[in-house]
Image 1 (cartoon, helix red, strand yellow):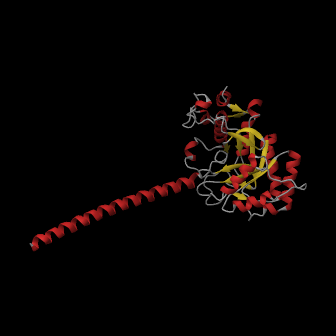
Image 2 (tube, one colour; image 1 turned 120 degrees about the vertical axis):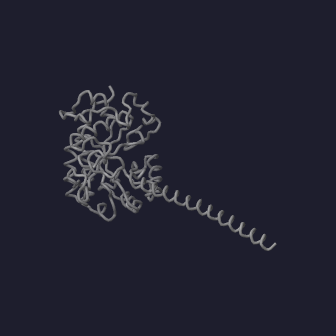
Image 3 (cartoon, helix red, strand yellow; image 1 turned 180 degrees about the horizontal axis):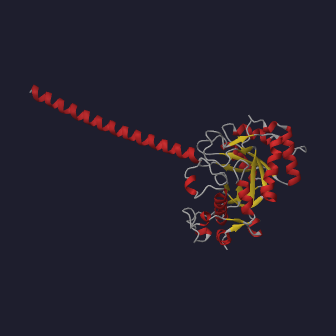
Length: 336
């Protein structure tokens, strides 16, 4: 049975009832009546795969839960996707989206402590999968930010999340992640590592990460953002464990038309990864969500404005030339 149909037939997961709003008819994004690979041809091609974190034949697309675990998120159309913003409504909506993604071939799912209840919702959904489905999933999460919006969309200008790259916060958030995701965690990343935060120079943090890697078997990674991504990445690749082995197994870089600074580094890492000599690489914000949309709109507006100005200028020039020509002809006739 298709995972979506199985969840909807149960109307509950792990004893949690899925709200009626989450059991509604097909949305505009998913054609449930069709087989996964026939759903408007958006299913992941079996050829679009690679090795990720040592797992072969992984699809090249993954799914992040930043917009699924909290009601307030800067993303175009996010409010229209939700019929309700209660915890139960969003838990059910997340289960639907994750099941649809799995049915389409996506196998990597990414959460974070700052994504509201994303880890809780992800763990809730993972508990509904049969062993065969569960064996196909790879789960990653991140620490370093904590959620402060208290399930509010409007926080009065206050931030929805706050960064704290300390060993104490790492220990606290590891315990929270474990309570929600348990043994499902494959990858644990520093959320938005920067040179300014000093997290890569903090010996106590590096020691804690090494302990997690050795005792729990978690892969260690870091996500990057900002124009200093290449410098941060270069420093991260030099961080070693007590035995001299590299600490980090994975890098999540921000790369798009607005933020291309990591491009060269990403290409080099991809080549090294292909030869099994470097960390795994995955990219976030490839389409830059709202910012890219705004930039495209601004570009279109400017382009239209320039075109109109040029056309109007050409028309004015033609009119002026015609008038000058007529005036010249009139002067000739008057002289003659």
